[in-house]
Length: 443
Ligand code: GLC
Image (cartoon, rainbow, N blue to C red):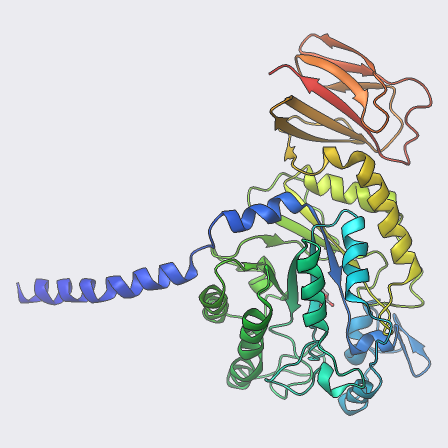
């Protein structure tokens, strides 16, 4: 009996604490996730001190195999990749002066491209904060520019109805004496890392939430071996939930063990799943090979290729977070702007098949991507054609009409043997402009 009373006592004591923990970690209300599911397309920005170097340092340009770890295009990684001593690197702070930066221009460029949210590297691995941080003086206030960049961007996002969030490197930090380092540079003991975690990482994240009220936080891990244990992951999730009921958290907070309390999955860089995923997700993607602006990375993808990634992700329930690496003066490279405008123009004409759509359970033929939508007006299927096709056969029944979405040109079709056959006249689909066939189904 005594044992039973002790047990009961323990259960009663444990329950509220357990319930509390559950509550702290629980997902934000689902309506705060809905905007993310609807948004489909967002802008990612990689901008920091590394932008000044544009991928080259001291006569060397990334990738440069004369450095043992120099074989990467990522210009934001230039410091450890080209072995730049931190004391040298730190001096860049005296040169960061983006006098041509105009927050509204950036946000409008994103909006006109058809993007619905905006995510910027508030602090990347280099450790430099784009805002006026009371936690660290490795921040924008120590540059000749001396103005908080996030305040300006948040204001512009709110004005133009853009959701916004921050990339925050919670694990790697090459400025703090105890922040995590690339494996070839060094390692920290867990006690050392804890110091960085408590002194810089958590306080800066709190600062970002309290001062700027973001809609999402984008954390970054990729190695299985890292200091972000499930305990630290949950400590961070609890912190975010405590200060914001709406802020979404991505899966890279702990890539190999995100747990059940993150809000959406984050794919590897430029990675595209082949299947429909149940949980909301997105692919972070580059326009060049590098994230940060790299003047000698000439590998720009075409707008059509990027639109195809967007549409393909949407057809599997995912989003596409497309990166721009601005120059250090605060302007977008013209190559990025042209692509954004081309994508925006395509979405202007074809966005109906993207926004507000769902994945379709039907298997699409080679080179065809499908989405669907149900509105008060009926049920619709959209077929995106990535190659010239004259006879489009789909496993659909009860089609009532078929047309080219952009022009409204009616197409001949037949419902035959439980399948739909759409005839596309010669010259209507060229295979490089991603034309869309819109099909109305019987309700
Ligand atoms: C990787 C890289 C990083 C980039 C990120 C974007 O984690 O370390 O430079 O910011 O991916 O997805």
